[in-house]
Image 1 (spheres, protein in one colour):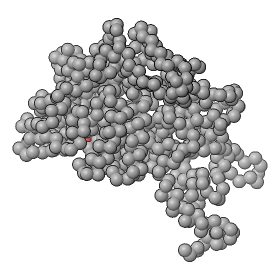
Image 2 (cartoon, rainbow, N blue to C red):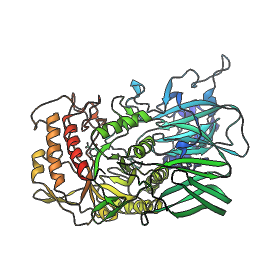
Image 3 (cartoon, rainbow, N blue to C red):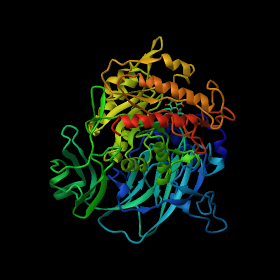
Image 4 (tube, helix red, strand yellow):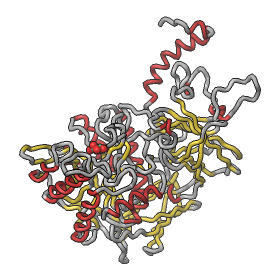
Length: 631
Ligand code: GCU
């Protein structure tokens, strides 16, 4: 390859390096987006939420790295592996010590940004920013305790996070909506420590989600960051729930951080139960225990949570868990063996009033307040795992949840790295929320094309889901098929792998106007429960007109009235979740003075105001509530 101008600028030895690097570059670039074996990434312990921890939330220094100049050397080899010399990340903390020293970057004196939080809503110039941003946070450790593990935990960071502690690479995490952790015990020191994180939210075809979605690609460290200390042997994971087959039996397992011999206790004072698991050089032990006393089964009208405490030698963890079974029987959906109707609503993890990602308990409570006002007992958390406040609060409020991984629209179905990525996000979602009684459905995909490659992908991930958790139901938001004459059905082959057949339908919005709904009918050959996982129409709050004027509240309301009539005629319907609770940001929505970068299908406006259709659905759900024994 002819080396033009470079000679003038670089001594010979660098050119040799350049040639060599060029060949390396090609390989490395190809690998960059593949999850690397992160050196210190560890399985996230169960229930970090309730564990003692040191928060690293707050204002962090940051700078924008639009050209990736601090990640790649000039021939695009990541500094982590560049023979041109490792980027001294600790240096990012430094500043010129004398007048001649050359520094072209430093956190010293740089802007500050709030963590947790997306960057897009924190600085006007970052609203549309997609790329890398470097974060730095110092933290003090009084002492380094021997035999203690120190884990650095992130609730989530979108999309790829490269993490450095005191200049050393702790690891990489890919996936913007699930927790991850690194064991940094050997990277820290007593006194001041430096945590540097590069977050890159660039979209990519082979990523999960892929590069085309209908939501805002908020970037940043979007959830809590904390330090947790663990003794050598600690409670790594557990599952405590009622056995779906024998609903007066408690069953599950306890897994420790390493093999152990001795007793592990599972106690519940208010359930008056103690289970002693005798570990014999084992890491994981299963249990089942018949509950002899009566107890309250968790449900929307009685969201009773029992206190549980798990302990082993030096470690103890407490949790609040609701005991319930969720099953199907033919076309019925049964909660604790009783028919259930899901009065639902879809929601994105966004605070429309602030126009940013939800990060706090208050943000979550806001969404639940609106849902409760709707008389809803169920929410579809779209289209990715939301923060942990959602299932935790839903447990205490008695709201049932559908959780989903962002296998959305077109995914790189035959790319094994894409599959591994999706499966990891699923595994991490289930691991985090496996003890949440509110979570009843794992959804594996939304509106994906009916191709063979896709079916192979979804069948595989469905089998993985069942192997990870057989106590919940599996579904995916499918497309309906038009049989002609306004008759519809589901003939998608993935329906046979779903416990609940769910589909999105936009009759009256993407298909015709609301009057088409009166003659629409739906039938299903499968004897399974059916959920309509989306329907809706866009409306600009305050725009009133006749009910055939698009974007008016009246059109949206008319569509709701007509759709509710259509839904009442669907056999096996066990619930639905209209699209969507609140208006949300989307780069795909650019109609001036109506959308302006927002999807307006919310029942609640950007300002938090209720649209006409909100009251129509509120009324309908009130009536439904009274018929279903208050479930
Ligand atoms: C789709 C999709 C949503 C999208 C909605 C819409 O069905 O699942 O993510 O926002 O339709 O078009 O508004």
